[in-house]
Length: 91
Image (cartoon, rainbow, N blue to C red; front, side, top):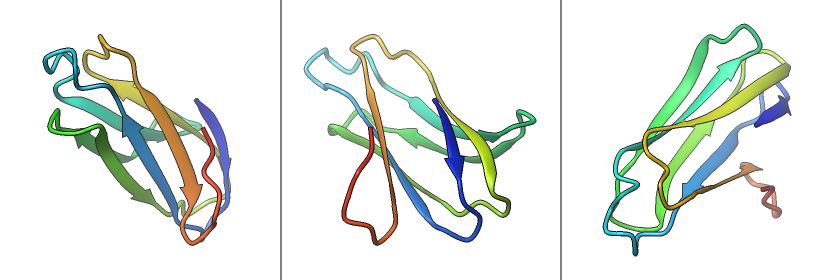
C-alpha cells in the first residue's frame, strides 16, 4: 500500500487479522519502506489477539512510503493507519 507521509508527524499502523483459523496468521510482519525500498520501520504480529501489531513511525522526510505485510496471511488481514492524535483512522 503506497502512502504519502509528512515529515515530523507520527503515524500509527495497525495490522489486524482473524484468529479463528487456528493461528494460521502466526508471525505476520508489518514493514514500512521508503521510495527506494529501504526498510524504515517494522513490527511483528503475534497470533494472540486480533490486534496483531501497532507500529509508530515518524518519517524524517516527506514523501512516498510503502506498507508491506509479510508472513502467511492465510486468513486475510487489514492494515489501517492514523496520524497520532487525530480522531480518524484510514484503511
